[in-house]
Amino acid sequence: MCLVTYRARWLYRDMTAEPARDGSRPKADPLRYSPPPGPAGWSALPERDRRLLEWLVVAEPVTAGQAAILAYGSLRVAQRRLAKLVEYGMLRSFWAANAQRPRGRHAYRLTDAQRRDLERRLWGDQRRRRQPRGDESSMVHHLAMHDLLVGLLGAAQPEVGLLAWLPERVCEPLFDGYLRPDALAAVGVGRRLSLTFIERDTGTERLAMVTAKARRYVAVLRSQHETHPVQVAFVADTRRRAASLSAALGTFDSAAQPSFWAIAAADLLAPPWTARWLPSGGHPLPAAWQPLGPGCLAGDSDEATALDERGLGLLPMLEGLRWRSGL
Image (cartoon, rainbow, N blue to C red; front, side):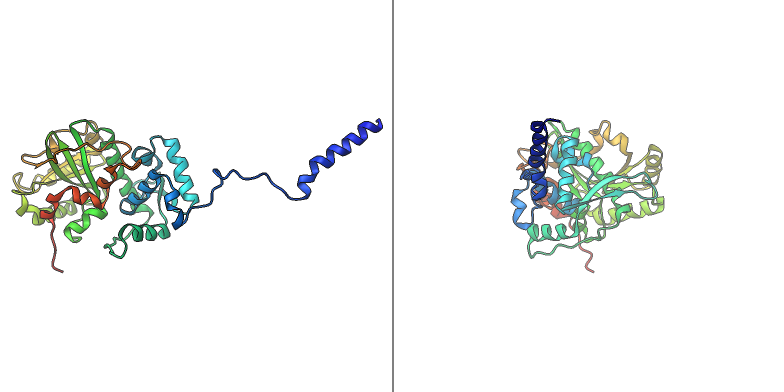
């Protein structure tokens, strides 16, 4: 080996080994490796992240597929943003499953610390009545409700669609806990508005418990049938279960308040808008309204107000339905 080649190899080795000896590393990309945002970094989050996190205070869990329709527009973007929020310590991921749904699916919910921070941010010193959060197995029921929500959002039409969707944590104070609807759907059809309380039936309750629940609705809402017409929809997993529910609910007077109907989830969403949504009468719609559609949590749109406790202000007729047990 010639002397020139030998010296060149040593020179190359010294040049490449030097960075390793002094421990230097390439600079991190500040956009890729940004630190987790704390309370002072809330405003640094994208608008759609903030709207989704605020909605989860009352809506509990969400899957990436549901978040894609509500806020992000695509599944890939939703997965990336939810993973980043987990990294920030704002969300935690878990596997939602129970005895009836052993396969389950991957979902996200607020961490306890983030929930407390958001409650202070949203409501300040006005303490709201809290419901028990439940364990991971109960999250299956919440996700089933969100499936209905995103299905109805995807089917919005110019003259037919959701005006508001109030989840269980928003509906519960209406009746002081005596009734706990899984959701309230305010559906606009033409120039009329129908109010439908939704009970998501997963087949775990006996029919006697379902009819007892229906009797509580009648006891509370019977006197309101003239001025505040409402209905209650029991949404089942299968057509067979829906038929059993229909038979059990058929014992109630069809002219009573509220009116009841049962349907399978697949039939409710394909197609979703049928005459069932608008009973005789209904409520007049606001002067100008647009049905909610995909992306209602995507940014600075006012549509986000129709999916949480602010939606109560969009439906003034609910004041007439408020009930207190006196306990």
